[in-house]
Image (cartoon, rainbow, N blue to C red):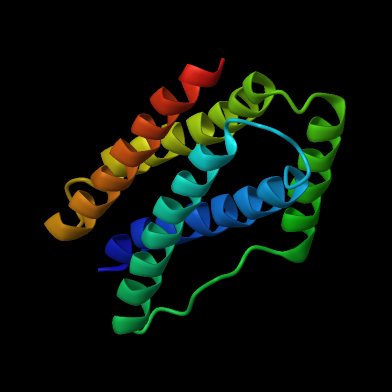
Length: 145
């Protein structure tokens, strides 16, 4: 039973951090003239949707949600600011996001494989849908490279 919710917790944590990162990145690009901004907004909406759905599933099953530490978020914010300051071109931003999302999708793929036999089908489906979203997002971002 615990495995069902560990997978959903992972989706929540990943989507939560992605939302935070995308919000900070969007803030850093407000004054800039980047074509990638609309894409970032769409990606943020999708991640927000997955985060909210995962939160709902966890709460409905009495699972306490673990938030990322302030330090993790602060480090992510610092890294984003540094990268945007260094190069705020659409291709640099796309590359930065592709790297982050790729790490998340690899981790999700491993988790799906390890939990596949012991986890409810609907939890695996939700995780596979999340993974497909991440893969689709990577492909969309490649247009900006």
